[in-house]
Image (cartoon, rainbow, N blue to C red; front, side):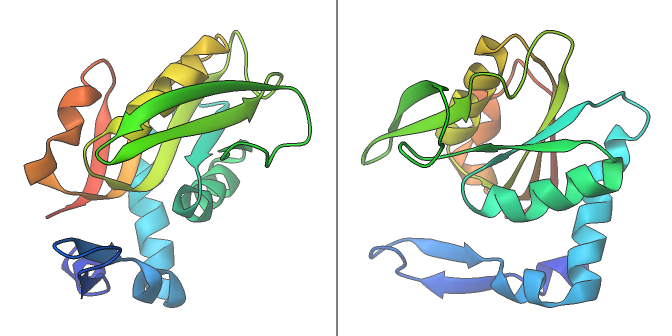
Length: 171
């Protein structure tokens, strides 16, 4: 994992003063690092009969679609409002400084689906918990969450206590 950790760039004061942003761009730019990250994201879930991978906008699309490809299952995007062209189910949730909404097509998941949710980063857990609640509102079962990075001091894992969480790198 140290080779992956070396590919995470710290960007101070982004998107605002006091925030130390964990930039995954160097990791996804490097083919061997990207392959390694995807391998370690999906490895714990091999043989668990996952039927779909869900990715949270936007960086969750990068890793989620590759994990879905490797597992041989479909990929379902959770999008910001107004980005999906069909009937949607939505969930709104609070962020540290404001609120946000995620949407999914109403027919994207249902009873019998076993879902792995993927994102690049787990911070406070607000987006991840809302994503889990949205997936379950469609009748799907959540197998687990997978993250490339977890910011341990922000304790986002506590908000996901109903589900297993797998993170590759802890900061």
